[in-house]
Image 1: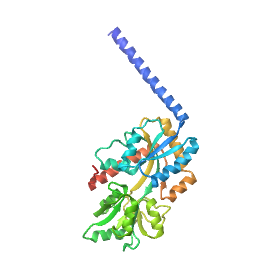
Image 2: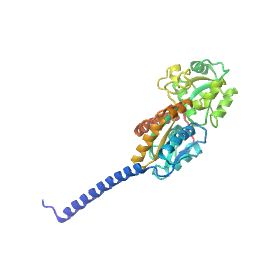
Image 3: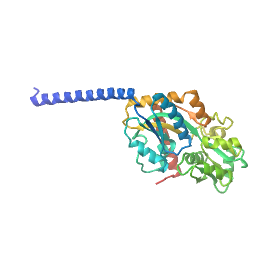
Image 4: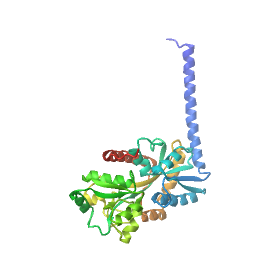
Length: 337
């Protein structure tokens, strides 16, 4: 069969389109590489979903100081608390994808929120690119110092023997401490009475006052009270013991729950569309600062576990967290709509 003029013309234009696409891809790649080489050329803003003073704020400021010195541009920490982290996440999701607005991602806003809200103005998987997982901050299961409880196994046995549920305090409905308590309850087959507070501090105050039996604050919030003798630490929720609390066993050590792990965490994300070269530079520079002896020591003293790693590893970790907490929230019927 002979090839007509129309078919020849169509084939020619198809070939031209393919060449244009190839040139565009190469141009974008080269521009991204050049952009990454010149980046940052102006101040970088790190947006946090929490007020000053918490674990995320401390981590961001420690890293921000070192990164600013290395980049020779200011690194501005912007605290945007509100609506369980929704305010900060929506702001960054809608920011230009140029690497100059970075999100300090966290367990609650970027994993638990997707499990407890039917609708959010952002999607942690779709609207952001993972850069690096910076730290994991375990929770500590604590009781009042004078509570007649020897260890975590004793607490569970007492809970099973009571006619009414044992009350525990968290930092709020849907908070990591709330979910950690529900995960523990489901794995040991005990029903706890959840009492939500507006943060770890008021929960600890009521714990020491005898209004609740146990609480699950972060290691950062719990450690000063543990060391002063005002509360008693029964277990940490991480997979291994904390260097800052070496005598406190894990939940697994106490109860033989190998699958139990409930840690708060922090990491950096940027808006989707940010050039890969910028993502790679952020990952490399933040990772280098994280592993410095000075920063590592300071973060460990705060009860954090330094992580680091690749952006792909952070992406895989986030995917697992989304699946895990959706399952826990569904089983406990936790909704915030």
